[in-house]
Length: 256
Ligand SMILES: Nc1ncccc1[N+](=O)[O-]
Image (tube, rainbow, N blue to C red):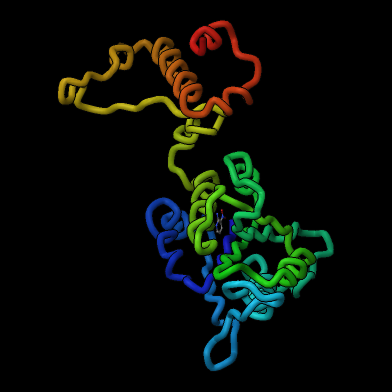
């Protein structure tokens, strides 16, 4: 998977070079590229913003630098190809352009799973009051355009949201997480929150690990874990319980 990020604060994305995502990039599982939007400005001050038409507080990101940055990314295409802008005669899917925004569709684990199958993701990190709408309209002709929100609160820009989405998506790309087993029974992977987890010592400050986990009885352990997941989900996220399919008698009893 190729991932491009455009930002006026490229150093914000340095974190992607660490840990599992960084290793995956070194191994070639992920082709991560961060671009400084100011590299696509040519005036003395590398201007990326200007005041909003119609008045109002704050500044708006100018269209041209964004179009040049996105064309540069399209022109590079999948490593080596030199497809020209809009050169999509259907043989390859358009790159997905994710525009982090509180006005976007909600990003969740289902969306992450869907995006994990993509070949090329591009993240446009807006700042200020946002990006001139004409860029978004123009981009819709060359990309599979996805305005996306990571939550109903307001950040100062799209960088943190992009980091969150890149991490959530990349870890689902085969090979990025060493043991795919660790992707099962995670919160939101199957609609339930994860079960409580313990490690040595078996007794710590008069708090003991639940007996069943020391029993070696795998059936009882699996049952205990599912019960805890149901209880925790019902307590913290009752909205997710409502979305579960038909529950069996035991599960219903746990929730009563
Ligand atoms: N919530 C947000 N606030 C600002 C920019 C992006 C955002 N988001 O959720 O992607």
